[in-house]
Length: 52
Image 1 (cartoon, rainbow, N blue to C red):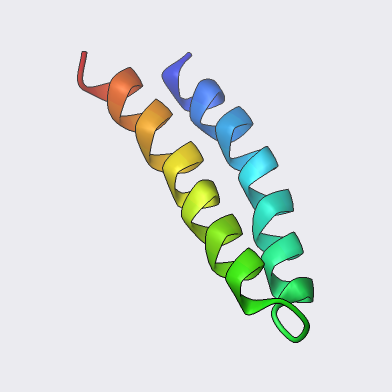
Image 2: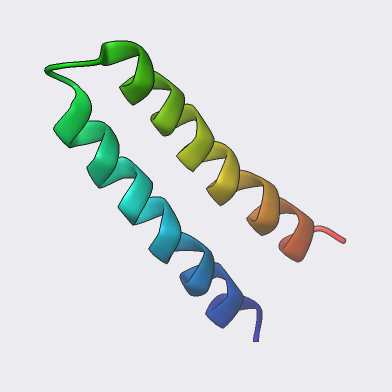
Protein backbone atom coordinates (compact mmCIF):
# COMPACT_ATOMS: atom_id res chain seq x y z
CA UNK A 1 0.00 0.00 0.00
CA UNK A 2 2.85 2.36 0.76
CA UNK A 3 4.39 1.85 -2.64
CA UNK A 4 1.15 2.66 -4.44
CA UNK A 5 1.03 5.93 -2.51
CA UNK A 6 4.62 6.69 -3.53
CA UNK A 7 3.83 6.07 -7.20
CA UNK A 8 0.74 8.29 -6.99
CA UNK A 9 2.93 11.00 -5.46
CA UNK A 10 5.41 10.86 -8.35
CA UNK A 11 2.83 11.47 -11.08
CA UNK A 12 2.12 15.17 -10.28
CA UNK A 13 5.83 15.73 -9.69
CA UNK A 14 6.53 14.56 -13.24
CA UNK A 15 4.15 17.23 -14.51
CA UNK A 16 5.95 19.91 -12.49
CA UNK A 17 9.34 18.78 -13.75
CA UNK A 18 8.20 18.84 -17.36
CA UNK A 19 6.83 22.36 -16.79
CA UNK A 20 10.23 23.39 -15.40
CA UNK A 21 11.97 21.91 -18.43
CA UNK A 22 9.87 23.84 -20.94
CA UNK A 23 10.03 27.17 -19.10
CA UNK A 24 13.81 27.07 -18.57
CA UNK A 25 14.59 29.12 -21.70
CA UNK A 26 12.17 31.96 -20.97
CA UNK A 27 11.92 32.12 -17.18
CA UNK A 28 14.71 30.51 -15.16
CA UNK A 29 13.36 31.71 -11.81
CA UNK A 30 10.05 29.98 -12.42
CA UNK A 31 11.84 26.80 -13.45
CA UNK A 32 13.96 26.74 -10.31
CA UNK A 33 10.88 27.32 -8.16
CA UNK A 34 9.05 24.50 -9.93
CA UNK A 35 11.93 22.10 -9.38
CA UNK A 36 12.08 22.98 -5.67
CA UNK A 37 8.32 22.52 -5.37
CA UNK A 38 8.49 19.18 -7.19
CA UNK A 39 11.29 17.94 -4.94
CA UNK A 40 9.37 18.94 -1.83
CA UNK A 41 6.21 17.28 -3.13
CA UNK A 42 8.21 14.08 -3.62
CA UNK A 43 10.32 14.09 -0.46
CA UNK A 44 7.84 15.11 2.23
CA UNK A 45 5.07 12.56 1.55
CA UNK A 46 7.56 9.72 1.08
CA UNK A 47 9.40 10.52 4.29
CA UNK A 48 6.20 10.80 6.30
CA UNK A 49 4.83 7.59 4.80
CA UNK A 50 7.93 5.46 5.31
CA UNK A 51 9.13 6.78 8.66
CA UNK A 52 6.11 7.29 10.84
